[in-house]
Length: 549
Image (cartoon, helix red, strand yellow):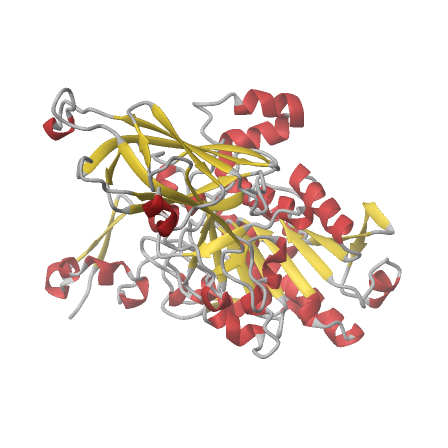
């Protein structure tokens, strides 16, 4: 079929569209590699540019998608991007040393090739002078005597975004060249190298990792969504870029809803704190977050909170995880709602849960000495790990599953609707929580209801008492909930089980701590009236004891 291209006022009209069947299958039409028309932004032949010793960059049809990535350009000149590598060690923790891929630069520096090396890569409209880069660098050096190298590509991270995405490919070449130079000339072990990248920096790490055989680890901190989501693996960060690729998603609402981060899994371990979309404390309409941050941390941090609070939360969570004594435990689950209902609480086969953040490489399922980390991590590709965090430091919370078993005495209603709150008491502190956070909930007597809650307090399995507060809810729009004279609005609870998750070691239980508490009355259940309270103590009597009462 002959195709004709007409340009009228900058708009292209393609003849033969109807006969080509394009409108019959929009999804196929959207994939640019299936378009056979010579559009001005789509090359028929491969376009390639080479950059001296670094190698070459090409743009083929696989880099295009009519919706996800409609435009591609080549990077700016090396002299404009001016990629620099700034070394920090415990010998020079605050005064950086400029590294280049030559013997003179390296040998005059404090770089210790026998120690592990951590690279930090900033993202779009960012610089190595940002507060978070300094904070992460300091935490890394505090935790371990390592080489910290900050990748400065501020000359290429400026708008336009399309150009910045192209520049990341050249920065990736620069980084890969430096690492390969260290491997070739100083026998640096690639498995000792860990690249940490935020936003566009995460994909930059992927480009470098693809060119470094055997690279140890890449951590992607909310990898940028525009121009990467839905694209082939070689365009974005993906599990093949390192032995371990762990990713923290915190802003995956989608760019149409001002979400800057990817939502699709792109690593071996993909973590979704608070569902990976909206982070607690980031709704500026409900809290004075920006003014407080302005006073406490200055204009730079306040502007980040205002524009990209969810997007930068991944940085804060990772930085907090480096030296925190609280483990960020993610639970593998098909979706966030099932996780919140407590259906994904176990750590089956060592891969049902994983550690988010700096210590992700210590996840039990990945450090099994009998199985290589590479083969073990392949099992988790595409999985999602969920957890909840706090709205401010300390962000790490302990995860609890609260299970309420309801009794069904003869005088009880089949079901009741209302709100249920709990207070859990331990020598280590008290926790107050809402067990029906989504509003009123229908509870059927004789059933068991579980929910996941989080709190900074670690009860260490020593739960002494639980108080349940029950309030019946009548809804005029649901006549069956109206309870005036002829119905029973009480809630009958047999027992409450509180479980706290710890990462299991070999031979340990999934839920390290579990406490089952029962009513202190003579019956085997607590009768909680509307707006009343039920008390459950640490020990449950057996059914034989109740029958004798």
